[in-house]
Length: 275
Image (cartoon, rainbow, N blue to C red; front, side, top):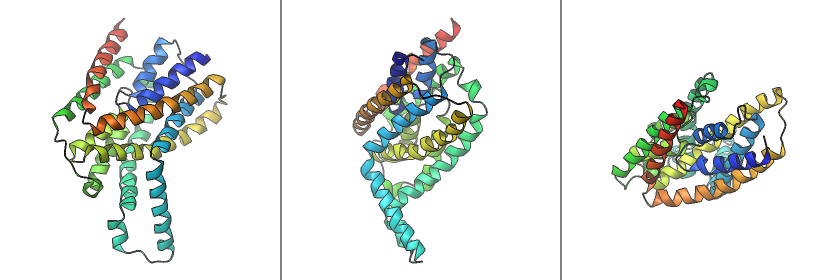
């Protein structure tokens, strides 16, 4: 892979990881049109870690608050001083439990679909169909009630449902942010809380997936090239900017504005598969 190809794919990953237009779908299409038939595994892991770090930077205050609460909860547990109120009244502990609940279906679906990754990641037709489906999902948020509940109204069954949607986002063309944020909004959660939970939920999923992929990297003796380094840096920078932009768009209730883009790109992908 050339350096310019790494930069282009890094920018694509950074922009599309957070904007609800499917990063995996764009990477499949980008690799096709750049003539990259076998993208380096090390590159894929690195650019995803770039966007992982962008998420961690944007939500650093929330993450530190959660870790602080978990540390305090752990100390209380060690001293056998836990009471029911600690779980009910501490919003950070509640978010942690919601993230764990949502991560369970994500992991199960991810492990299942991993057996079919060669098939689903090589089909431009599938990308096109899923992009059209994603666009429709986004468009429906326009007709949903803009008011919703905050963290206190976030039930565990909602977290599980959002986790299912995140697991399905393994399929190229399905937007992780688009599906998870929309799913939470459909379940009656306000947009700000839905977006916050979506990206916090993505952290253990992305980190876990990349740790598992490192084994394959070692087995294949993958090398971290200059293209990988540049791609990772650009995925972090563009990812940070895209995430900040998306949060503003979600708060303004204009999430649906990405639907036409998904539809157009989906049709383009289907047409390109026929040529």
